[in-house]
Image (cartoon, rainbow, N blue to C red; front, side, top):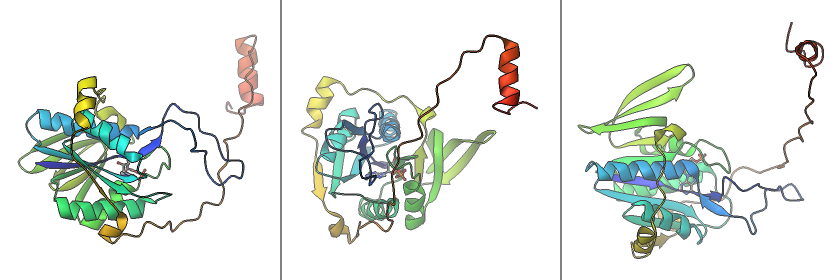
Length: 250
Ligand code: AMP
């Protein structure tokens, strides 16, 4: 079974992003970049499926600047077998990414396509869904458990008020959620070995995909500054404030 995992290079989850002074986006100069955390979970799941003898090959794919090679090397160090970098500078939207991934999927014919449920920079939560639609394949989003047997994937997903279990015929697209697993840290020997693993560089044009954005970002703003809290002197004062100031109590 071949698995294709999509990994995006994003601003590190622990880095405090700053909005550009002209409000056109966030500062990306001198900012620590990392693999999108949900994509680390997707890579980890693929590696575990290979370790269980279910998967035979893991191909990691990223669409992004030349530096996204670092993100792919991390996937290789975690256990992916080879990588494809579609070099693209500038903003790209989920539809363009999904079209590129669909073109790669048609060429690679994976049995399972694993993506993060969302990229933490654009928070779109769209790429996996669009990819499944473009390929005409089944999809399960927000996976918290994946089991593969007899050409099917059984996927548990957390939904409002409980858990839903879906069965999909492979090939299928699955997007992963936080609870699926805890990604491993790549060991130093594996980081070194990853340097020698195959990484192919290509361009969106080679797949006939135009990644020019269709949406215009009008404005990016900092969230409103939170007001300072108050320490109340008694439960009576707390209840009074909740009732008469916050108006959250009847
Ligand atoms: P999004 O729909 O932008 O929230 O992204 C959802 C998932 O799509 C991510 O977690 C990745 O698995 C995949 N993805 C999005 N953008 C890219 C990209 N530029 N390169 C590779 N995978 C991507």
